[in-house]
Amino acid sequence: MAVPRLLAISAIILALSVSTSYAVPCSQQIDRMQAKFDAKLEARAAVAPSAPESPAATAHHQPTPNSIAGAEAKLGIVSPEQVTAITEAFERAREADRAGDQSACEAALSEVQHTLGQ
Image 1 (spheres, rainbow, N blue to C red):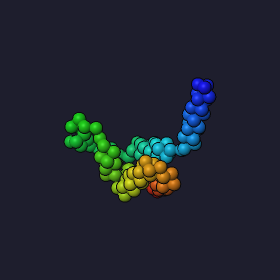
Image 2: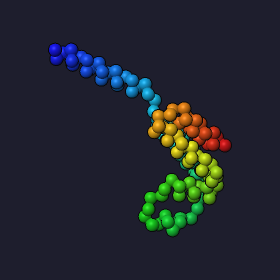
Image 3: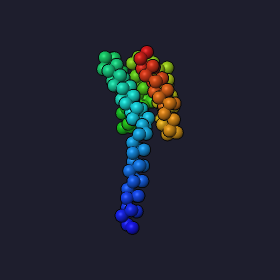
Image 4: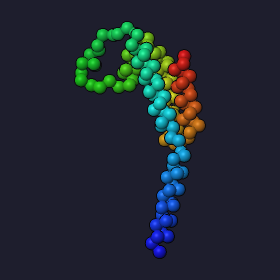
């Protein structure tokens, strides 16, 4: 009797693992798009002029994404409008991912892609 029960449990575990492998989390797409965005910013920053170090930079604090984006916007690497649009689109994508809404996540990432292309 133990063998049929073990087989039934194994079959259930196998079915669950197969069904979850077909679910494509949008978080992987978000990570890829974030890496693409970061690479584009780095490429632009490499050819842009540098700015003097701010007093906040000497306070032994880690920079936040917003402070980095603000500095890059001041240098003309990325416009403030692009930063706002991309930040909001990434947040919508993350919210959609948490909600399991693949199409909304993909739409938000498409907006990021479009804004990056400008």
